[in-house]
Length: 71
Picture (tube, rainbow, N blue to C red):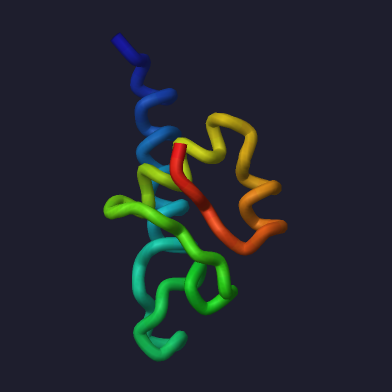
């Protein structure tokens, strides 16, 4: 079982990731921040794709090449 503080921390990090990268924003004319920055995230579930790439150490490579690609 995951302790409360770890679980809460994880939930907050995922929410922050979703809000800052995936969720569409009115101030960005309906675009998600990742789209407004010109970063292409491939796949049906963008949140899962970003988490997968980050866990594999591909975050900086993906940002540098302006895309998040498949596994």
